[in-house]
Image 1 (cartoon, rainbow, N blue to C red):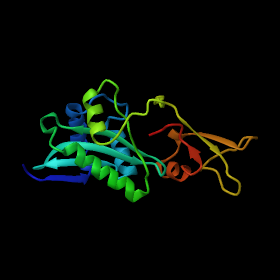
Image 2 (cartoon, helix red, strand yellow; image 1 turned 45 degrees about the vertical axis):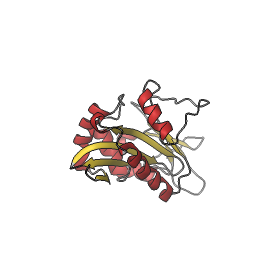
Image 3 (cartoon, helix red, strand yellow; image 1 turned 180 degrees about the horizontal axis):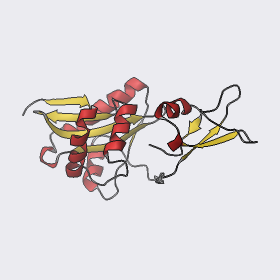
Image 4 (cartoon, rainbow, N blue to C red; image 1 turned 120 degrees about the vertical axis):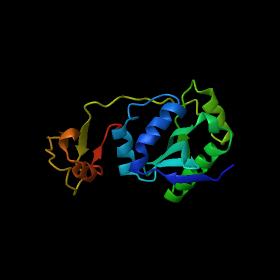
Amino acid sequence: MTELRIRAATPDDLDTVLAFWRTAAEGTSISDDRDGVDRLVARDPLALILAEREGELVGTVIAGFDGWRCHLYRLAVHPQHRRQGIGGALLAAAEDRFARLGGRRGDATVLTRNVTAQHAWRAAGYSPQEQWRRWVKPLTNALCRSFTLEGQPGPPGHRPSAKGVSVRPWASLPVPDIERSLPHCRTMGRG
């Protein structure tokens, strides 16, 4: 068997990754498109981790760290390459990344109907937390809601109300302005 290469994805990989997920990943997400994955790689170039064998993509995992929690998504191994240690190698790379960033615990999003994935996650040392349930809401018209911190300016173009709250549609902000706004804005689940 040839050597497994683990590396971060680049923008040039994204169409291949999306096609791979249609074959190897279970379930779909509203962010499983070129724009969604392009934003991921632009925002955190090391988050999307790929496994390759002889130049062929055989596995992926998204290892996202928000500065507080470590989140794992899209652990996928090509069906013809499963049970060869690829998933474990991807998780080891993700966990090493989290440890370097100061993360303390990884959590994974796993479909309840995906029994194969549940076995793989258990084998890797993960366990379900039955007391938690994931809550989601598609954001089609999300707004930035900013509470101006004492002594700090609000986001670009903010207009404080009597209560110090400013609201401006995200769509009206250029990307650099959104990035500058992030310390002041809670994105209401964007991402």
